[in-house]
Figure (cartoon, rainbow, N blue to C red):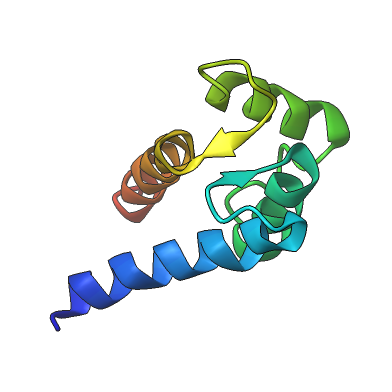
Length: 92
């Protein structure tokens, strides 16, 4: 398995690590999402870690408004985090 494939599998495993807490592998509740972000993305979200900021992120990700974040919606968060990381790497 390539390094990128290992990282992709790791992302899926992290999603499942948090989604299993309520017994559903397919979605994250708001609480599960908050825990995931606080533990797995602490530096990325350090400026928005207040309750209101997390709520806004959750609402923005929840495209179908079912109060759950499915894996495709979660990938949207990762795309934003990757974009920020990419931009920060190129800052002088």
